[in-house]
Length: 213
Image (cartoon, rainbow, N blue to C red; front, side, top):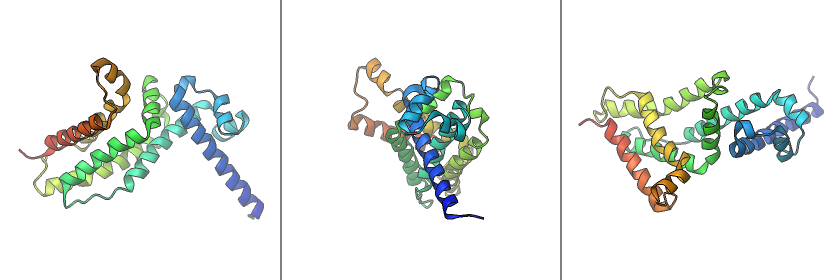
């Protein structure tokens, strides 16, 4: 039988888990998986190491929850977008803009994915949820492509996964390699003008790859 105290304890447990995940996201984004220390996470979460292991059992499981959480956060933000399927080109450009802006506003997303790629996706492969999260992302793009095909605007041989990869790569590479690209090319790619120019180029390239010629 539930009691008022059990409800309070449940809420406190959820708040503790949320604080730990928030702290872990910050630490792993700064230090990577290998450098992310449980002690640092517990201090930042105003918790203790014992509680982290109680809720997440291991550092690996904590990192996996963080990895799933950043994908889920992306999907949640994307689900709030409203695309006009009567204008597939405009909807596609809106989607590219959303992805670009999300990467810009969430550098932790890029940092954690970079860390996981250094580990060759070994943690991601253990997740029972990532395939469902990727399906949600593809399901946002698919109706836009189908609407464009139905209107005779987009090629019928367009592959939704290829299009997703194109959008992701155009938005991800620029942001994930920003600092080295600035040094290597000797130009400021972080200025608003440079960013706006690349976004316009990315939108144009995605549309060009899909439209019927």
